[in-house]
Length: 107
Figure (cartoon, rainbow, N blue to C red):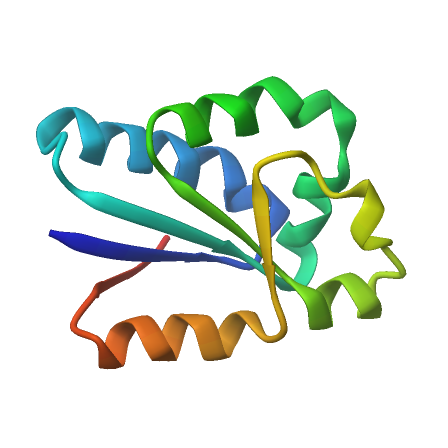
């Protein structure tokens, strides 16, 4: 199973990450990618979240930041936490994955 999870709101980052870990507990072979854009991208620039992001990557999740959102929030790419992949447009990443047959979740 391949799952793309879309998170745009800071208020939903916690439940999104928890749900992704729950999914991997149920199906350890699942491929999970979380795309952070809009306001949620700020989570990936906060050093206080470093261990959480490392845990996501260690669990096999792909953690993705939207470059357009970084620009709109005046966040430098250099400040993005280690292990995060940056794509030009988060919405394009989501749509591309959906077109490849990935299951889509937005909490």
